[in-house]
Structures are given as structure tokens and as C-alpha cells.
Length: 344
Image (cartoon, rainbow, N blue to C red; front, side, top):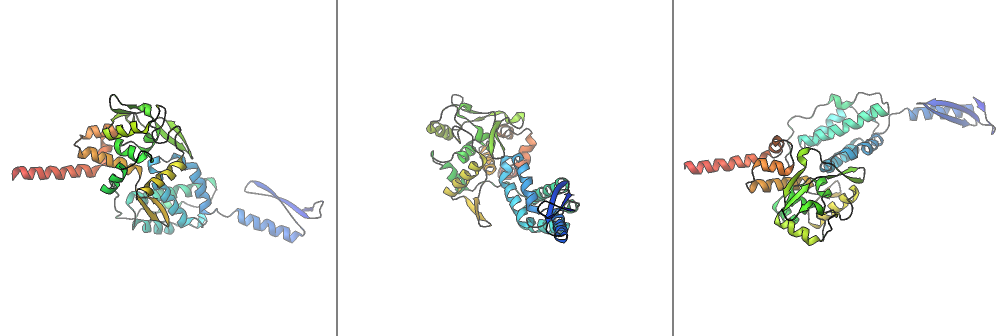
């Protein structure tokens, strides 16, 4: 410890691999400064700091259809644990949080919350060097959670989408009449429409890396497909007067993720399809619900299951069966009624 040219006591120390120089008028004040800094920097970070870094790194990897659900899950987790230091979070805290969620949300939703929380805490352990055992490892999902289903739209919501005007945001209308995944719909250009054969060629999708969208390949070979161009959509596309290179939903260039979220919310607000959660207005429907509604419409139109699989771009018919189990149950009840009528 020595004095510098200004007559201050000075000392260089290395903490967590970083060198820092301290100075003060007295040795006692200097040592106090070093002790305070050491105590503060060696504390575990606040949960929200780690969570924000995790979100920055991982958000672009989440598929668009899942983004809205994961966004709400993330917000609830940060609200619950944000101001606590990560080494203060115990298995009992996590278990109580999951129990609370289980009273409101389905099994898959509670499981998603646990997955996100687990990944954030893992980041604290591996990137920040926090010496804890991840409390998520010691916690099981609550028993008897309800299993969620993909709800189809109400008749009123379907009618609102059908009533979409040509001057409005066309995403909901496009998915309703095609069953496209959101990324596929956002990448669709007029040149992908074959008006002579009345088919739509699905060959690409919009993927997000942060806020920026990039047109890229599809997930599987079965995702490359042709789907029928129905009359209502055909008429709408001709009415829009777009060039061959234009994107049907966004015009000259693909949408950024922030613009997509804003335009989707405004569209839902204009059509009375919003809910209020924690004081925030949110869309009451998501794009995958509309895709699911399209599937239901195909089923009700007596399109066979194999054709539904092909139109949706599922790689395995088991995916179609598992995802839309309630449709086959409905068909079973219909068959039972027909059998009973026959024997009567």
C-alpha cells in the first residue's frame, strides 16, 4: 500500500479475475472500500439480470408459434423471482410457484414455466459461477394438473376473421384459409400462388434472429408442399393488386418481430379479440389456433386424415392424430350415432 502523487493511499487488488485500483485519504477508508466492493461483487446476481441475458441469447431460437406463450411464461417468472438473488431461490420456492400456476394453467404450460426457470438458473450456475444446485432439479411438477387442448375459435371469432377487410392486416385471414404456420404465411409471396391450378406452393418460411426476420428453408421435407387455393382467398389475393415479388402480408419486405407483435395486437383490438392480463391488453387468439381451426374445417368438410396430414405439412400422421385427438373423438361419436340409427 503506497501513496500516489495526490497524496492518497492506493492499492491494486484482483477480484473475480478483474484488476481494480482503490484510493483513499486514509488506510482505514481504503480497506473499507476494498471490503465493501469485494462483498458486493462476490454476491450472486439478481435473478432478473440473469433472466434478461438468457432472453437475449435464446429468444430468437423459439419458434414463432410458441413465442407468445413463452413470453407470458417468462414475464410471470421474472415477476415472481426478479428481485431475488439467484442463490436465495430454494426448491420450496420453486415448488410453491409451480403449485400456484397449477391452479390456473395446464400441465404443458406449468412444464414450460419450469423449463424456462431451469434454463435461467443453469445460466447463473455456469456463466456466473454461482455455487448452488439448481433447485429445479429437486422439484417435480404438481400432480393432477389438467391437460391443455388447442381450443378452436368461437363462431364469432371465425366470423371476425372472415370479415377482415382488404385494407387490414391479412395474416389471420391468410392462415384461416390455408392452415399455414405463421412463419410460412409471413414468407408467402404472390409468385408462390398458381392461379391457373388453384394451388399455393409452400417453399420457405420467415425465421427471426432477434428482431430481424430472414427468409429461410422449412423444417422438414414434408413441410414443402402444395395446398389448395380456396375461392374466397383467391378473390382476396386478386383484390390486393400485389406484384409477384410482394409478400402477401407485408408488401415489399418481411415484417420485423416487433412490428408483427404490434400489428397483430392492433388487428385483434379492432376485431374485439383481446383479453386483459395483469393490466395489459393482449390478443385473445394466437396464429396456431387459427391453423387448428383450419384443420377442424377440413375435418368437418370430410377431408380424409391422410390429406389433412399432407396439407398441414406433418411428417408423420401420428402427429396429426395426437395433435387433433378431439377431432377423431368427435368422429367416433358421430359414427356411434349413425350405427345406433342403423340398428334402430
